[in-house]
Every structure is written in C-alpha cells, then in structure tokens.
Length: 144
Image 1 (tube, rainbow, N blue to C red):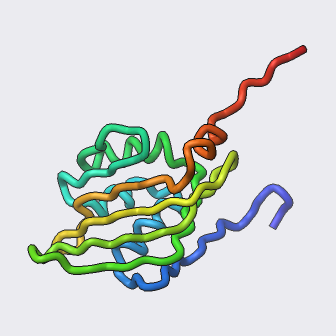
Image 2: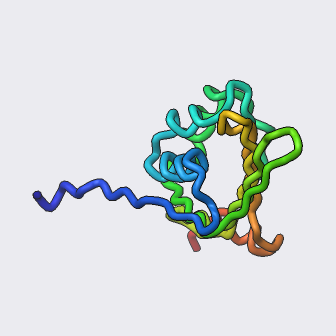
C-alpha cells in the first residue's frame, strides 16, 4: 500500500437495545455514503423529516437529499428502544451523535416501520440548546 492509498474503513454499528437489521443498516449505509441503499430502506412513500427542512418524501427524493446534505457525516447511534404499536407498526427511538468535519451534535432519531420492516418515516432531532445551534453556523472571516 502506498502513502496515497488508504483502506476503506467500515465500522459495524452496535446500538444498545436495538437489533432490527433495517435500523442498523440505515446507519451503516449512511456512514458508508451509500445513499441509494439508505433510501431503499424506506417504503415507497417513506418520509425523512430532517432538521430545518420540509418533509422529504419518496426514495428518490430522499437519496437526492442525502447525497447533497449527508456527505461526510458520521452517525454514531448509541442506544435505542422499540415498541410495537396497536396497528402492528414499530416505533424505534435511537439516541446518539452526528459528527461532521466542522462540528458534532447530539441527535435523536425516531423511526416508524411497517410490518415489512420498511421505514415509513424517520424524524431527526438535534438535541442542542438554541445557543449551541447558533454556534454550528459557519462563521464569516473578516480580513483586517
């Protein structure tokens, strides 16, 4: 191996309390930058509720959004809980962190899965104070 080539490191995801393959795969594919595979985990009219965005509906819209907005993000889910709802759908709550090259922030993900384990919706919530959120904005640099 030369100095210019590096092996691609893939880290398996372990979420305390969660063993559902679709949930684990969501985080693995996002971290690998395989946004098409992530989008394919959703039901046909699945919805991604990303912070500060209108709902993103459908696999192709989700893939397009992720290609633009999620590049370079590393999701670090830590623990979760799931429960079966009366209609047979499954609600999964996961907490953890998202790391980018510029910042890290605590995050909660709320998944709703259908009986086929497809993702009906994911709501991503930033767990930060308003001041912390303001600090995430890029700062303008002024030349003096």
